[in-house]
Length: 119
Image (tube, rainbow, N blue to C red; front, side, top):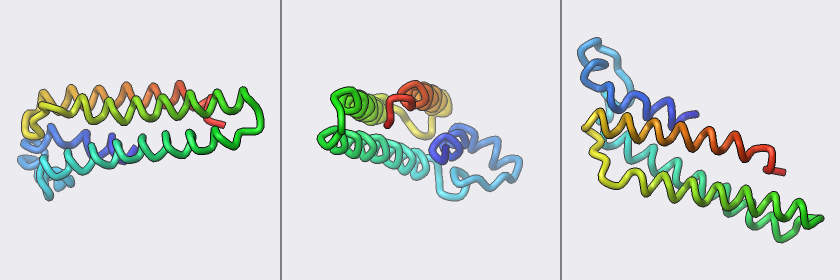
């Protein structure tokens, strides 16, 4: 949620500045917020993937192990996707950042889809 909330403001800096709306992107700069949120989301997905992979080893049943491996795999793929899609995005190009922002929404929907497997 935090990443979506802060990333949403990155492409709107010009309008926010003109309207005197002091978002993090206005105060800190588009590049800093963009890169910080990309890193935060990448690390979060990788950490969740690692935690589920580790817990799969001690799962009480094979179905629980499989569910945890599936959740781990989805998290690792999402973390990789965050970084891959960020390549070539200019944080000061509103259209590119907006497209990336929409990609992040798809990853959040993927997370909700995988959530029932997270046991």
